[in-house]
View 1 (cartoon, rainbow, N blue to C red):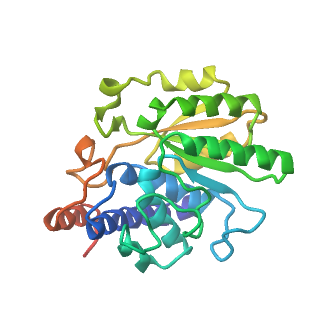
View 2 (tube, rainbow, N blue to C red; view 1 turned 90 degrees about the vertical axis):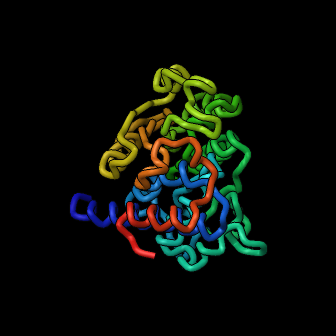
Amino acid sequence: MNSNLIELNKTANVIRQDIVKMIHAANSGHPGGSLSAADIMTALYFEVMDIDPANPKKESRDKFVLSKGHAAPVVYATLARRGFFPVEELMNLRQTGAMLQGHPDMKAIPGIEMSTGSLGQGLSAAVGMAIAGQLNKDGKYVYALLGDGELNEGIIWEATMAAAHYKLGNLIAFVDYNGLQIDGKNDDVMGIKPLDKKFEAFGWDVQIVDGHSIEAIVAAVEKAKTVAGQPSMIIANTVKGKGVSFMEDQAGWHGKAPSNEELEKAIADLGGAL
């Protein structure tokens, strides 16, 4: 992967540019938690997952579920850059009649495995997919991406128990641990620490990584694949709004579109051009 790491980092940066451009065009969306997850998504879709953009529903494939469905822009940009649909479609985000809605739609968008938006439910869907894969002995993996604020939902912990109970070694989940949610800091709204110990107590194998190091993310996935009979949780330490100076670590950018001037500044921060 080392020879490809520069290209992967460039791809993550392009995805970040897509995110701010599409949210600006829509004048609506969630930039903060989309930008924080760009490196995770790049690692999964461009290095890790067994998928085929030309045949999104091929029987033998890895699956991904975005449990924090409001971060749809990072998934849309990733899918477009991976070749699932034209990049030009990104600028139609949230437009009436367009394919790309505010939350992922499995019926309309190639590459989307599960419609999500109600926080907490995506992990349960991923658990179900992993159980099916286990029963079918398909040898594939199910990946899920959770928000750290999403962990306030009780259904997350029901799914966590179920995954351990059914010994789902084919389930690899991530927490995008940026420390913020819509109302402010996680520590102030509803503390979730110590997160690693919580998942371990529920029977998961746990790793903590730099969520902005694609190399570390890929290595963590490869290690998770060696764990038998146990689901894996990769806690990715990230920065909300990563890459855009005025958005970084700011809860106010959880769900707000940039102005024309802010878009120009954001793209400049990311080394791009309008």
